[in-house]
Amino acid sequence: MKLTKIVATIAILSAFALAGCSSDEEKDASLTDGSLNGGMNDASVNGFGDGSGMDGGRFGANGKYGARGANGLPPEFSDPNNPLSKRTIYFMLDSSQVQQDFVSVIAAHARYLLANPSQHVVLEGNGDERGSREYNIGLGEQRSKTVANMLKAQGVSESQLSTVSYGEEKPVAMGHDESSWELNRRVEITY
Image (cartoon, rainbow, N blue to C red; front, side):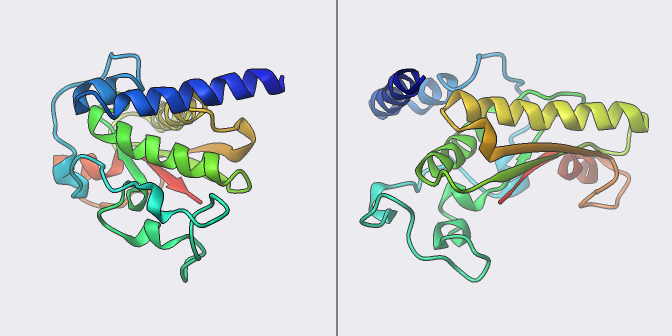
């Protein structure tokens, strides 16, 4: 079992090293099955670009992230240029597929969780108000499981992950229009 984890870790690290030599499109596609939805550019929704900002210089001498901030998380989580500061993954209507814009964000959280095995996250799936309550609970669950599966594919332990679905019950935008619905179709990564 330990040999399998070591081989998987080496494979993931090798993939990240090789991805640094490829284009952003090739790097991001290597982390998913390639069946991502096109369409809306979610960078306009949450205000981030290519997800760059992770660098080895932010690790302490023991390989862990540096000092903790007031919220109990390292300062990287407050730096708007760091993908760790993005803890919301947005989805298209009736979809649980992660869009290309969020692949690097999920990869950054995977790296953090791998470097900090005592950390745990809850992946909170949400939907907009359209559809039945039951449908939205199911869709929120599928969205949180999709993000969990992407984290696990990058080596994160299942024991570090929990999923929950709130369906339409916890909207962040109270409007009844597309701009509100876009903000409510999400998975929140909560440490």
